[in-house]
Image 1 (spheres, rainbow, N blue to C red):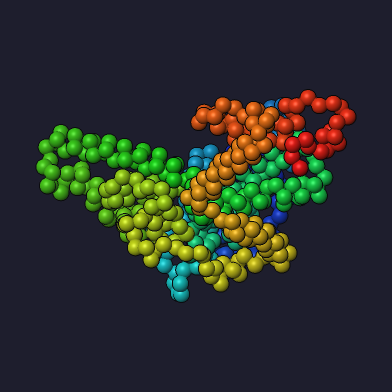
Image 2: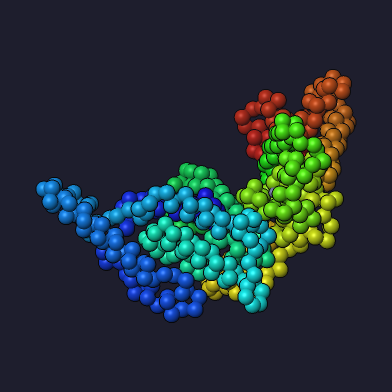
Length: 468
Ligand SMILES: [Zn+2]
């Protein structure tokens, strides 16, 4: 799921002033947690106290209103709706932590969230989940926001919910694109193109249109990108980001130099700002150009896996189209000439763990399998006449030559016939040959248009005076 959607939903709820009921909240689920080995990090007593506190606050409000003889509007009564978060200062903190949890992956994480070492065995997404839930729980507890934690747990941090949005749900696979973006494009296309003139079609017609108009187009596009006929658009955006970062590097260098000159620190000294910067790069961010990783926030949030540190170390202009590729494993950005070609990732081999997570229900798999088959059909169909760019050019030449040949044949025919048909040809010159080509293309149509005929003539019955 994309960051934007997750945060939008969470923020909406945290900022809302009428989403919570304070009475009649179901509590029996929490009481089992203290027995559970994994879930005993959840402080159930704290949650109970928090609930009581909110009820007390509401009671006090009602009492105050009664003592001052003020009538309470409907939404200030006890059974009414309440705000989720009391201390609004906690909202940005919760948002920040959730954003970091969302993007955390063994291949990419900020330095303040160091890699985890499980107590036994290898790291699994269950470990990551436990740690992230504990962290979020502790943060909510620190701000004493019980309702916020209850909401986050039920809707986001439960194991089966967490797997849907956290990147660490698959530890050996780093997503290359946001799956959300193609889904939105797909529905945008359906809404704005297919349903444009028939906004409320019957479901069978909609399915027909999707299968026959929409999916083949997508399949062709994927095929073109995979075979290098067309380029995907991410490289252009990466160049923009890269150039901006280079600008920032130049600015940083200027600042470092100015500061050094102002404080009269020599370039070789250990306290020179530039030296300190490179030390930070080594010790704090652990920038590694071979693994193409850095633990700074810029790299963590970059969609193209670049940051000032990596660009500094790379020390060359932005790699050209097709010389770099984003991939699901390290290095996340594979650059031709810098990284070993063997590091280039092939097709993804699903591990057992991921497979188990994905095997949700039989129906679902059958449906997606059907769609995959459609994709393959179209690709196989296209592959038979698969043209690369050069082949396409050759084909265009062939087509043009064929037109010339037809024109030659046409002129020869007209000369052999002589008489009226020869006179109809334009004066012979290179310029007028274009006209001849047009004539050759539409020879039959022109014949019909140029001669005045009687309404009952034989040519009207489908015959042609000159051609058989
Ligand atoms: Zn960095």
